[in-house]
Amino acid sequence: MPPIDQRLKELIQEKQAAYGYEILAMEIMPDHVHLILDVDPRMGINKVVGQIKGWTAHAIREEFPFMKSKLPLQ
Image (cartoon, rainbow, N blue to C red; front, side, top):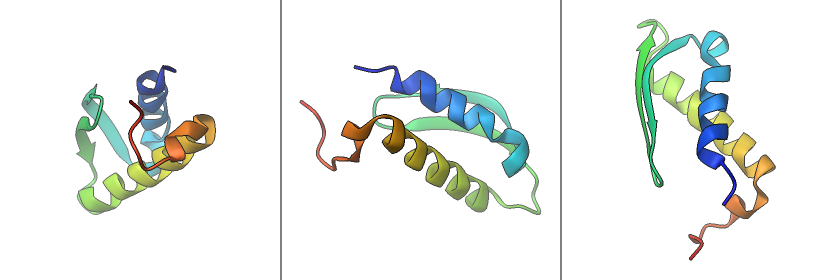
């Protein structure tokens, strides 16, 4: 399986300045991600998480086309 977890970490780190957050801790699990972020309260955590999810989902699906399927691979 491709190193999707490593690429996901890179993508999340890449947008810190643009989206206004700092990663304090991050753990990538097979089916979810744990993030502890320092976010500007004026921005709001829900907006930042939405931006991260949108950006990473788009980028991962572009780079790993098999991830476009809604069914898990067995």
